[in-house]
Image (cartoon, rainbow, N blue to C red; front, side, top):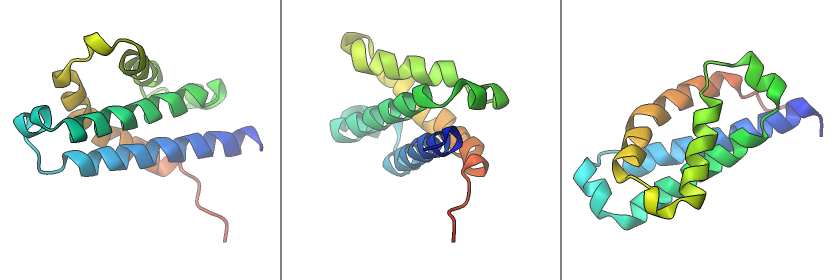
Length: 116
């Protein structure tokens, strides 16, 4: 697989996970989110998928798209994966409601069309 194809695959993983987060939190209030462990853990899992995929995107691609907060995305994945007691529900909520919709808009034009 060529580097461009690998990057496209990781971007697709990021986009799909972000879209799922949007679906999970649609119509919810913070209180709903805080009380619903299933939704909360689902969002956290997809944030980890986004971070893991972002970590594998090539440095060259990241350099061409500095508007995407690659380091922040990867850092959040690391916190979710390794610092269980440090996970702040408010931070996860704000990421899901404010940053993920923006990430979807940033990623969509970067995904190459499927060959026909």
